Length: 556
Image (cartoon, rainbow, N blue to C red):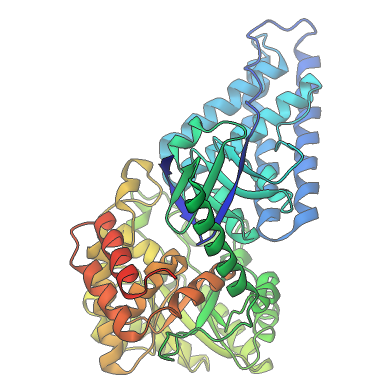
């Protein structure tokens, strides 16, 4: 028996045999073309187009986040810069296969060097390259094995096209040697409810047929477990299955303290699925999808239609809409097309909107119009607020447009440290743990070189959350969490112990978080949070919280 550590996605546990992804296609030979540059260019264009169309078709078949991911891959296959690079390499005498391999590899290395979110997109380029080379060579595209029985899929990393179309009747769990909690494998595993452990380097040593326990809750893969370990894992899996099929109840602690569980949404299309999974409302509606890839901002009427569609899906329930959060990794031509040396610390969020107030006013007018036509409880919030004056400005502008409830996102240490004054100027706060961690730790979310610092478990981040929670209690104002931290079932308990009154997350995480909260009362949550705060680092905080949670609620 041996244990392989990684990052678990969700709280699932599975026992099953390993089936490994096939090795990638061999690198195309560095041989001169025998048919001429024009013919090679035509071959490359045909194969790139065919792969793009196949990816789009796969996306249309599955919908949801998977569709977005696969369409993004299709765009990679038709990226003008990459195609120009392929053409240029063919012009030096290379075959289409070799030119595609080299052009995609060069861009992959560029992204991998950037690390973080962009670094994790490098694996997507590898997959597109392999599919194009396979099409050129008349070979089957890389894909998931089919051993003829249920299995645990083990791979270096998974391409979106494979993850999106997994046979959920056969694939028990996913284990990858690479990737992280924001990789496409992790994102799609959450969406499809798959048990997964990612970023587990030891997975490379697993062989076909090895019996393993994939324990996402404990972030481990156990190789050749004992009979007792298998029995324990199957018992825990059965308990979790019973919870998943139990009637959905409002989020609450064991003593009945309500903790509404809300959904993070990126478009109105996902609203119905979120409701089915038990979302009690929306804690973060990202409006960027309406603005991206446009030369001009959408009109008030265009926006109103989309907002009304969202609000109509949640009658009588809270829907928190974040106004446009542009800048940093989301530049928009009509807001912030000027280069900045450090855009993460530049004109982004509310700063960018103030510089283009007409865009903000149009958005608030559209939201007010949608609110008047529906009966959801609309709330709006501003991103990247750092000062009391910014909070006061936004709340005043929202009320000027007839929106009754206006709040701010706490994503900067400055806003957290003076949360009492910031909250006095508005109606609520929602903590964006992703950016709060980035700015607290001075560690860019997009840089892999500092990824080890980007954990919301760090006591410095937790202390800032506690500051906001205390301010909310003193002023009687709600404090929500809408970053990725809320989807971590154990960290969710800690956040409630620090003063969070609502939690918002990907809808597929709701069941695990709901079950976790139901194991503890308010005193438990406060005690678990306290030991996490006393730790020296993120890993120590998580270990201390786990130990205290197990002590207070030992496994059955």
